[in-house]
Image (cartoon, rainbow, N blue to C red; front, side, top):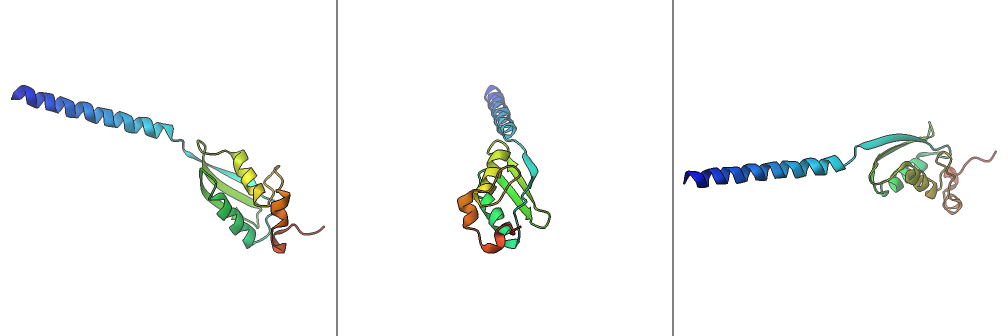
Length: 121
């Protein structure tokens, strides 16, 4: 009877250690989110802000987006194991806005409302 009790306790201890090891291994694989500020010089108004924020939330790995159209900056928090800065800039460009060196996609820019287009010089 005492041997069975010790064996049962040992099995529970081994199982607990195994569960802990699996939990630690899976959490080690997840990378911490990174926050970056991207110059978005062509954003003009609240509609631009809403469009970019909504669109980027569909980008895999993006966890938070905040567009400041007055400062012409977009702050993005993302998971580096799911996406990268180039993908995010491309996603912004695909909505019709410049993202630093990545120029707005012409077809997307053409579809923007007049208030969201760059002022004529």
